[in-house]
Length: 571
Image (cartoon, rainbow, N blue to C red; front, side, top):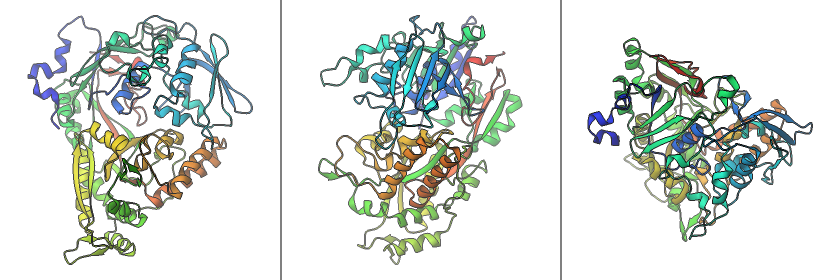
């Protein structure tokens, strides 16, 4: 899709015009694919909005992407009780928000009790915080002015990492959870929209919001009260301003990087050879961090529920999609090796499991689907499908098997993958209508209307398996292949689907690492057998980064800018 910036005069779309003032402080210019939908990170459902939250707010702890270890952030230390039911955090002294107001234990208690744990606020964090079979939530209590205690009803292995969730300001937001609008909704749900003046959004991390122009850019500036500068006795962050240019086309982003207008660009396989030749001339380096921390997959809509008295999906198609033989046949029919060679230029591997290979819980001993169209056809015939004289696949009632495959516009790699899937499945008689649609429209289909057949997407995660719980939990807000919505009726839960959800609960309360891994291996084996998602390819994580940016420690988990406050620009 052509970026909105291209509709402007060339001078206006060149980010370097922002640097006309020679007195401007050190500035980093990056790119994002689309506009944020909200500046309220608690209820954000899109990646850009979540990334804005990551720029503005810190948590009690953070994960080091290089080591995978949990490290202090707003909390300077913590202690865990012998029974593993309590964590006591001690906050750093003299913390402040970007408006100069104190950041205290009261902000922590407010963020958890009034926001993340509030049933009237739709947030994915609540799924991640649920504990045990009952789905109980932790208790968060103030101990004194600098200490806060988290109490769980049973041991919860991922809990230390979970408390890396962003802390938000009670002095700004407390009133919004006590008031309702004319429709009876908490005012918090309409607070910090993209129309909110930036000065009203206070921050705790290295940067605060400076400005936002729709379809143009998001600009961040130094937070004068950033806590880390006191810890290291340095005026951090060193880079005083960060600009995110909104460029919806990866081709346009590449063009602007090559012209010198951007300081970083994600390197897709199709661009790798071109950019590799230009490293010296362009004064940049391509960094590689191994395989990405995400699963790239297709998933069929398995939802058999009803909305407004009608099935959310055509019952004929629903019978196909809910047949495991059908899903396995589709998996066998996809030529992943050809994807790796032709689309990813060899810069990736066929994906076996949804868990990242770098995770200590990764399982390689799961059912694999090497390209085998004849086996795919045999599975379909075994399931009652048949072929006509033209080689077209029909179900037992004579219906031609066809479905729509959607992905978001602007991602050329996914578009190429979708086109190949359309071709691969045509070889076993299935008609696929591959269509790209606006990302926000696609998210609306997945989380609201539920009117979709099959999607091609990626879902990110980390080393901790429980970070994906809201995807696999039957009531999780990212359980997209059988999504629960407020107005959905008569949803059917498969036995294996419920088993996966319950195994995640067991895995989260198991403290023995070997036993935990065994549980998550069983989950991966179930997913590989039942295929609610069909994994495709693990590409390598790569970025081209200007050599003038000093201090970059690239990793697949954190990318190039996970330690942005420590980076410097040497012109």
